[in-house]
Picture 1 (tube, rainbow, N blue to C red):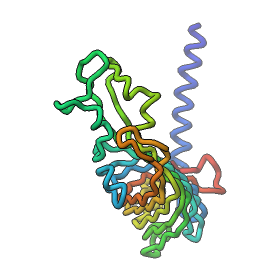
Picture 2: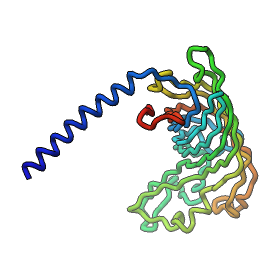
Picture 3: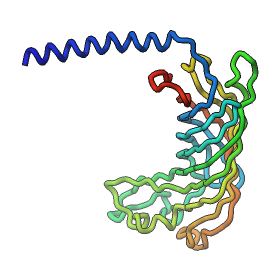
Picture 4: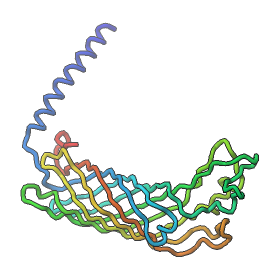
Length: 257
């Protein structure tokens, strides 16, 4: 047992020493950001609604993940998926369930603390180009992309697990959630930075989304009317993206993260 522990400690120490030496040799080699690159993107941002969406929700946030193929000539083609979330819901779909006091009452006659939240999803494919500002770094500059995809949003009914309200149980929530989705266009204009030494990589800019959507519930319980209305849902805001570049065609040991 002692021999095994001695061998294990020696192996860890030697591996650490040689690993640090190897990594130092790699990073001391001349490096560039040229060539084709696979960009793994992790995004966060804020958005403001417009048109029909502005009547239903206030500002929201997004968290997303995506991937771009970035050619050596600075053309971009990629995929993006975003989760949308917000706290401001302007349409009180539970108004018909509230008493004169303005509260929703549970089945045991207690007050139910029910909150309404915005939830959504945006999936898109896009293409565009980066226009370099200088010869010193040809992979960084003005990023312009356009895309098309799918936009969905709904009202989430968030209740207390300890209190039961049969009127908004899972079997009835579809009559209140205003589920809406459809085709959407998107545009992004901002700054893309890929460092020459590959250590700092990001993009930041403004994004615009136009959703040509339709309500997907045949009947809304609160209004007692059809929920199949066609809509124009607009979003505009900012997006900050941290980028992990994977340079294609290199020795995997020399890929910088």
